[in-house]
Amino acid sequence: MRILLVASAFNSLTQRVHAELRDQGHTVEVHLAGDDEALRAAVRRCAPELVIAPMLKSALPRDVWSSVTCLIVHPGPPGDRGPSSLDWAIHEGASDWGVTVLQADEVMDAGPVWASAPCVLPPVAKSDLYRNEVSDAAVEAVLRAVDRVASGAYTPRPQCGPGWTAPDHTRPYLRQEARRIDWARDDTDTVLRKLRAADSQPGVLDDLLGAEWFLHGGHPERELRGRPGEPLATRAGALCRATRDGAVWIPELRRRRRPDGPATFKLPAVTALGGALPRLPELPAPLMPAEDDPVWSDIRYREDGPVGLLRFAFPGGAMSTGHCRRLLDAYRFALTRPTSVLVLGGGRDFFSNGIHLNVIEAAADPAAESWANINAMDDLVEAVLTTTDRLVVAALGGNAAAGGVMLALAADEVWCRHGVVLNPHYRLMGLYGSEYWTYTLPRRVGEARARRLTDQALPMTAAAARRTGLVDRVLPCTPREFGREAARLARLSAASPTVQGRIAAKKAAREADERTRPLADHRAEELAVMHRQFFTPGAPYHALRAAFVRKLPAPSATD
Ligand code: COA
Image 1 (cartoon, rainbow, N blue to C red):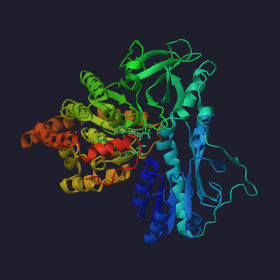
Image 2 (image 1 turned 30 degrees about the vertical axis):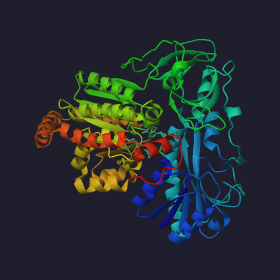
Image 3 (image 1 turned 45 degrees about the horizontal axis):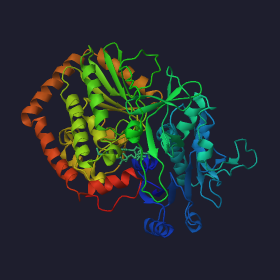
Image 4 (image 1 turned 90 degrees about the vertical axis):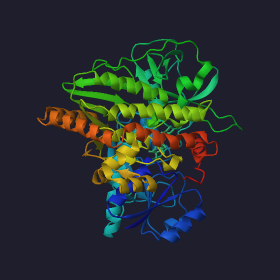
């Protein structure tokens, strides 16, 4: 079918629906909503058989939905309506949820239902659920709805008609007053639910150290205690605050925007607070805690016989200079262990989205910080590329983009959960890119396709990446099963009689490649271009980065 996707932003779900529909052979165009006249023009030009809105914050104009079937993806089960569906579900502690595909109609979210799919809501942040469980359910429901429209033989079910047993309510926008944490009264579980329901956006507005901040993200702390609301300690850039009956780790903060001030953006809590932070103990988490130890940390290492599992999870998949250096230290530690297969990743949600654009934007000298960040990222990638005494598997439970994809490609094998969306390109940020991509990308897909992927700058599904050779294995499991499944498959690889032969062959291949063109040569060539892009004040990267972190439309020139 010829399908027009209309979305408020080309966000993760829109990208996945786009890529999945194209994989199914449909012709798909994307239009960013906002201007109704522009939308009408897009509908006239594209003449779609179907319009799908995977993520739409405004209503479609009547003349559009009355001339072509328009399907809206609603992140809630049938009968649930309103703009903060998922927020309410998490806020109220729901464990089962769903996604509905309904037809656009006079009243928002009230049209007849073409398809729906259930999903579970484990206790993680809203944006993580949205990119994983909700995204899986949305794709299932969208594909079913598209088949039904194409068949021409299906009549969508009106909401709340005869025999309707599902909920029937429109819930309001979840406002900051309802999200607000009452530190003296809310127990830890309530605080965590409020933080998760608001993460990654809009955050929970709070008073902290004499200023107003949005709190982003939350993880439980089992041991530290203090006066409710009081800052207790720091760890890996996050701040620990006491609750009535425990404490929570808050990884990121965003300053409340002043009425006439510029847009603000999220930063690691310790960076955001800067000099306002009182003297607090820095309590690093052990890299190798006991398996059942619930200690929160963003990097942890575990062993399962001959398999090492190095997990990391950074908010938004963004890796600052500090993140890269800590992960490199952990990687070097993992290399001292007696394993034959090392799994890098394996957690849920983002694998990596490359250098940390927010930290760079906030730095006193963004060019110098970009340079430090890309060099730290390159050091990490180099360590993976030069590991010749064991197999390294990159296990992507969630999406990856730009340098984050190239980090994965440094491994010997790349495994992805089936719902993963990859963006193997840098162009949209006005960058040439580094992370040894000029070595690893053509090595996997050939020169011509490497050029196409980086020029076209399109998202791709795990399945499409598997077909092109970018990915070796697609794991058809749920987000929660991914870590266990990756570990199980890694154990099988380690137990295979061919493992030592494969390690020897990879060492020989690396040495041969080094003779053909040294890794240092790739790095020098990539960094020479990146240096120009970072240190030329008028280079597009600076304006693109400034817009990206503040969630403003990208300035037009991206080359
Ligand atoms: N630095 C800082 N923050 C980043 C980031 C980066 N490199 N990549 C993603 N994020 C943040 C986003 O701002 C967003 O924040 P929010 O949750 O507060 O909205 C969050 O991570 C999730 O990203 P989002 O854009 O919502 O996810 P998506 O799945 O819709 O889109 C990308 C994914 C990868 C297309 C998009 O995030 C992107 O273009 N990232 C930049 C990649 C890049 O150019 N890296 C630098 C070069 S190595």
